[in-house]
Amino acid sequence: MDLIDAIILGIIQGLTEFLPVSSSGHLELGKVLLGDTSIPEESLLFTVVLHFATALSTIVVYRKDVWEIIQGLFAFKDNEASRFSLKIIISMVPAALVGMFFEDELEILFSGNILLVGSMLLITALLLFLADRAKTTHKNVSYGNSLVIGIAQAVAMLPGISRSGATIATSVLLGVDKQKAARFSFLMVVPLILGKIAKDILSGDLNFQADNFGVLSAGFAAAFLAGLLACTWMIRLVRNSRLTFFAVYCLIVGCIAIAATLWL
Image (cartoon, rainbow, N blue to C red; front, side, top):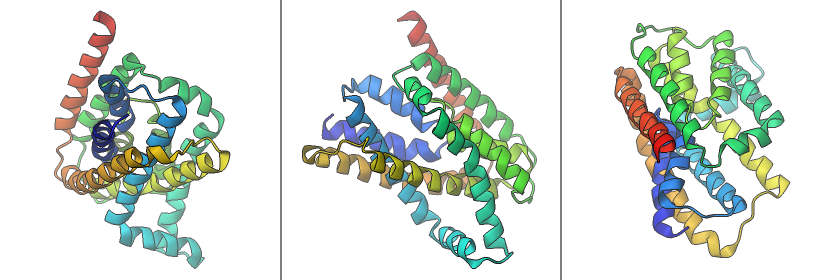
C-alpha cells in the first residue's frame, strides 16, 4: 500500500465512520477497487490505526461530554453524568460479547465479500429511510433503550451495516431525541474501539514495522481530519432530518455491489 492509497482509505474511514453509510463496508469496497494486496497482519494494523484516528476525532468533538462521562464513572453519585456513563456501559455489552465469542467468524466476513456488503447496505438504507420519518421528540436514552441500541451496534459489526446509521436509526425509532441519539451513538463506540485496540496490542496480533510508519501516519491523519468534519456534519444532518439522502446513497451503492458480484 502506498501513501496515496493510505490517504484515500483514511478519508473513507473518517467520513464513513460517522456518516451512516458503513465504514467497514466502504473500506472493503475501497480495498478491492484500489487492489490492496496487504497481508492480513498489515491490513489489520492499518485498520486499527484508522479506527483509533476516528475514535480520537470523536473525543475531540465531544471532549466536554467525555470528561463528564469520566467524572460520572468515578463520582460514585446518582447524578446525570453517572447515569449516562452506566448507559454507555450497558450499550457496550452486546458488541463486546459478539467480539469476544465470534471474533474469528467476523474476520472471515471481512475478506472482500462484496455480495454481503451490498446486501447489508440495502438494510442500512431501509433503517435510515424509516428513521428519517420518525416523529421528533425530546426523550432521553433510557436504560432499556441503551441495551437495544447496543444490540443494534453488535449487528452493525457485519460489513455493510452502518454502525452510526443502525444505532442512530434504532434510537430515533425508539423515540429518542435525534440530536441526543447522535450524541449517544458516537460516544458509545469510543470505549469499544479503545478496548479493541488495547486487546490487539496486548495479544501481539499487530505487526508494526518501521517502514510502515509513513503509510500509517498518512492514513491516521486523513482519517482524523475527515472524522472531525464528518462528525460535526452528521450532528447537523440528524438534527435536520436529512438521512434519506444517505438511504438513497446506500441503496444505489448496495445495488451496484450486488450487480457487480453477480454479473462480473
